[in-house]
Figure 1: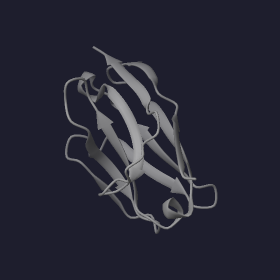
Figure 2 (figure 1 turned 45 degrees about the horizontal axis):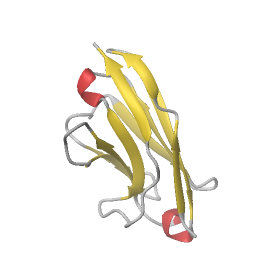
Figure 3 (figure 1 turned 30 degrees about the horizontal axis):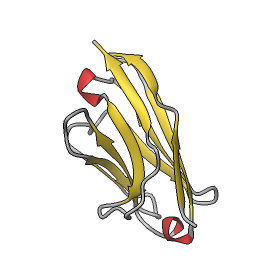
Figure 4 (figure 1 turned 45 degrees about the vertical axis):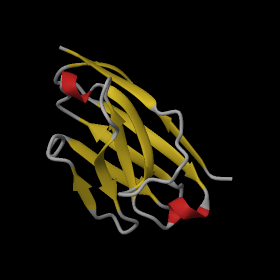
Length: 115
């Protein structure tokens, strides 16, 4: 049974930093490109960062230079370090396969950035 468990969100002021983490169980995640998705209030879920098994990364323009995605293949975890946070980064953050997510999602972790 595959599971995705996100953690580490919280409240930050604009300009601050947060780190979110994802623990993935299931073989599909160990060998696939993983990504972090964000769903802001009233908006569609969007892919903000992805990392291949080999460590190559890709970022949405809105977070480039501020967010860093990483993964630990041995532990099957994926992390997103978020710096220079902006109020528009507020949302529920999920991890999943990228760029095409699996049908199941974790509960997500809330990130709220105050101005």
